[in-house]
Length: 145
Image 1 (tube, rainbow, N blue to C red):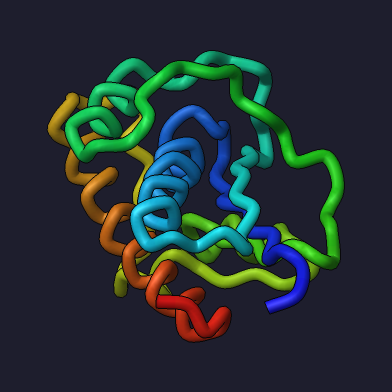
Image 2 (image 1 turned 120 degrees about the vertical axis):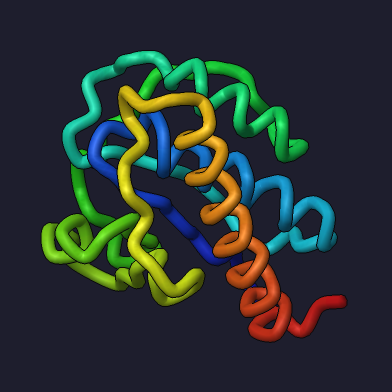
């Protein structure tokens, strides 16, 4: 495979869902030995807020990097990037190549913002399964494994 595939997870604030998706996807591609994918995440309305504490705890529980970071706003669309939107409402605001998480896990990924740790953990588990499915698809595209 020539060049890197650029993949960007999108949600509203980039403190929960897309942040968790980025970290979980990085875990999966590292475990699979995939080196041709560049992973990022953004929020359509991100304001530089720190990642949610429960999101970080859920990531650690699933074996991913749970360090906090500031949210990052999507300022412009890159036509060379594949965007993965958490919901159809987010997908409808994106120009370019975009798929929905429900294409990977069967359902839209609801925002756990402000809810209990268990809500974040359930959300992270759903995202983790979607990232596992996406990693398998990327392996087929790249001819790896």
